[in-house]
Structure formats: C-alpha cells, structure tokens
Length: 358
Image 1 (spheres, rainbow, N blue to C red):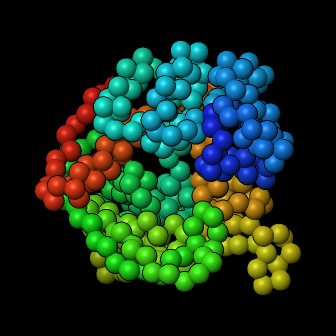
Image 2 (image 1 turned 90 degrees about the vertical axis):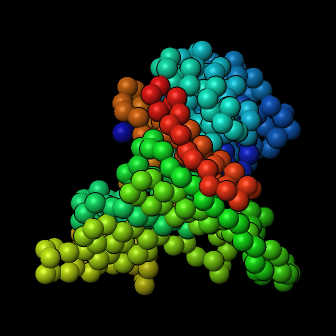
C-alpha cells in the first residue's frame, strides 16, 4: 500500500488530529511538511512531532512528494488559501467550514465552476457509529426515510448528518429554531478535566428543517463533545423501520418485525491480547462497519479523519468526490440559517444556491 504524503497549512488544535493519525499509521500517512507562519510555534511543532515547518506557501509547495494539502486555518482565511492552491493546481482538503458566511461561500462558486480540485474534511458521516447507521439507511431496510433527529454535532456537522440520513441534496427548506439556556456542572474541555465544581449556563439550539415531506430535527448543546453527563442521540425513521441510537427495528415483511442492536466489537477487552482498538460494529451476526485502520489505536473521530485522508488521496489521483465544496457550502448555509432563525425568532427559507449547479 502506497503511503499517502500530504502537507498541512496551519498548526492549531485541529491540525494535530492529522499529526496523531500519521504518527499512529506511519506506513499509510506521511505529513511531509507544515506551513506555520509563527516561527516559534513552528519550532515547537517540529520538536513535538518531528515534522518540518515552513513560513510561506511557496516553500511548502516545493516539498517533494505532496499529493495534496490540508487547509486547517480559520474559516476567514480558508478561501484565500483555496484560491492560491487552485492557481497552482494543487488539490486541497479544506477543514470545515470552507468560508465564514454566505458571501464567502458564494465567492467560491467560481472555483467550483473552474474545476478546482477541492474537497472538504467533513468527517462525521465517516465516524464508525454514524457510518453504521448510514449503511442501514442505505440498505433499504427502513424503507423510505422521512425523519431524522440528530443531537450529536454542532452546526454544519449536525446538518451534514441530517442531510445524509435523509438523502437530501440541495432541496429548499423552511427552518424554525430557538435557543434554550439551562444550568450544568462544568465538565472537561480542550484543556482537560475541571479543577473545581462550578455551575455554568448550557446553551442548547433546537431547529426544525422542513424539506417538504422530510423532517430534520437539529438539537445540540456545546457541552456534548466533552461532557460526562450529556450524551448524543440519533433517531432515524422510515416507513418500514427506525434506528433509535443503537437499536434497529424494521419489518422483514409486514408480519415479521426484526430487532437488532448495533454493537461495538473491540480488541483488548476482558483479557484479550490482540491490542486495544476498534474492530468494527455488528448488527446481529453481520458486520455493518469494519475499521479500515485496525489495529491502530485511534478515536472514532480520528478514524473518520483518516478516512477523509484516504478518500482525498483517491480524489487527488482522479477519483470521485467524497464531500465536495458544494456539499460543504450547503451544510454551512443551512447552519447559518439556523443561527438566523434563532436570532430573529422567525421562520427562514433556504433557497437553492448557485453551488448546487456549479
């Protein structure tokens, strides 16, 4: 298997996901270099990860063996780098979202029309449990799916899951949303576990997206990613069955109900000596998802990001889209409209945008 060699623009918290993946799977992924404009920060990254850093894009682009560049910078800076990479005909994998606002998304449509080689690292549909759910949805076991409720990811990530579960493309929608604040004991965050007990406000956004016959319910609180007491929830309903978190119910025929549970299969538990890693996810006796990166010790999100990297390498070599700039623009557009509906208290309508036809 050929090692995938790529560069990274940026050196922040998200960029370190790619570094951890490459360290865990050196035979499959190689970070050839990083563009980090702050020299001191670059030296720290070099010492911590053993990755060479440079200060200009031109210096990064002359790095030998680059198959593509990961753009892991703030959304306000991402469009500039996408244009510069497109001008050099270098494939780009942009972190989410690819632009800050609707004007920024619309301004990228010319890159789509010109055939710029850009994909976006929207990883949530590749997380093992979400991928297993999507596999069941796409198998037809649930029949025509008309409703999805997702409380698992914020903004465009949550919207991406909803659109994929419902099979929604660029359809118009009516969106209603509200915000609710409630107290919660502060939990861990990016810096680690809490050091004291304190009560903080927990902000929850609930949105209803009506796609004319298909209903999406978005529900998320910012605490969920790290919280020990706020769990994710996913409900998918079709005419012949439903998925409720890890429970799957469907009709084999109109008189024969089937009930299954999605079950994680891990090595290394209960005295098993294979190592500690996810093998995959079973539904009854069937593998619904197999971890393509076993036996590497990766989190679900790292498995998903690694999947994006493999798909990006195939795309850069002439393969198909896996999450296009148009798809990413649609998800962020709907997320922006959810925010607007919260702020105004009024229903807003998502109209078809130019990227749908780019």
